[in-house]
Amino acid sequence: MEHTAQVGRRGFVVAAAGALAALTMAGDAAAARPPRPLRRRHRALGEFRGMWLATVANRDWPSRQGLSAAEQRAELIAYLDSAVARRLNAVVFQVRPTADALWPSPYEPWAECLTGVQGRDPGWDPLGTAVTEAHRRGLELHAWFNPYRVANHTDPSRLVASHPARTHPEWILPYGGKLYYNPGLPEVRSFVQDAMTDAVRRYDIDAVHFDDYFYPYPVAGQAFGDDAAYARYGAGFGDRAAWRRDNTDRLVREMAARIRAAKPDVRFGISPFGVWRNAATDPLGSDTRAGVQTYDDLHADTRKWVKEGWIDYIAPQIYWNIGFAAADYAKLLPWWNSVVQGTPVDLYVGEALYKAGAAGQPTPWQDPAELSRHLTLARQYAEVRGHCFFSAKEVRTDPAGAMARVVADHYPTAVLPTLRRPVQPRRGPV
Image (cartoon, rainbow, N blue to C red; front, side, top):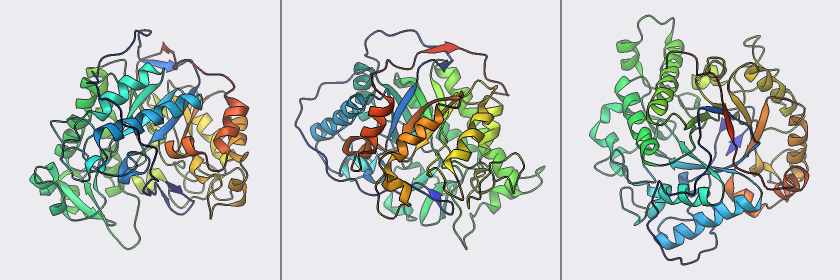
């Protein structure tokens, strides 16, 4: 995942092969777990210590396509154990990377990242196993969904024949070398919500999690081809950008309502790109000069979702070092703190562990203590209730020693799952 002031998007690379071990598989009942306190719509009382576990393009897990079911399961368990060893208490597990599923979904095919063939049954239930094994270890399991990305290519014929994008070709648009569902179509929004809510109903997940992809990141010289949808549904909006933002608002509001109706104790969180708008664009914005602004470029009004209380937590990806001129961590942190102040929404800070010691990153990232300094600074802000690290591969391997420094400086003891207390209901028409 790469974030700069000019290009703000997750860049995925194939993960290095992890240690494999043959384990006897048992049927993991999705609902089975030890007793724990009754959960309610809540704010977190404890400190959130999370890691993203990415599956798209086999970024973290599985280490490669086509491993046996036992090998896949062993790798997944190893990641959960590494979270415990690092004294974390939550795993944000990507279960719908490209309009496919890491559980036996009646809506979408099995994910290609498992077997190398989209739609092929891997012989086990990764999401069910992740929920059961995470809870056995005292970890929360947040199910991470990407609403609109269909494929990391533009050829529908490469999708399995039964894929909804093949049976509904009018739903998809190519853009920037990828295929997307069109967010401007009501039937698309309804379908992706159906597909995601299936996991909410069937598994004892702790939260639904979206990342930063709504409308796609802009690609120079290319237009997102939603002319027909705008002509049909855009009446009454001042311009196309306002219509697009309303489409994204509808996705968030409607998904919040679906989650509440299915399981009121399941939380809803979003981890957007770290800059809502620059102050030069909007006086309410942050003191940044980022080349991407979620409000304008991704048509995602992340600040509004917090102010309206439509979500339970926000985890902005503040993936820059302290002192970075265009987007300074030390300036974005207080801005987000002020945004959530007075709302029922928890603030967890997305941290760029993957940048620590990485070639080509600015000098501060070559210091293993940079990330620890982030957490030290965050303790000055009352609304910061935890951090989430991208990503699991770096949490486990820690090539620069930055994660070990965070644990030594800030996580001296293990923590219980983030216990919660009731708050006022979400505001807004959800």
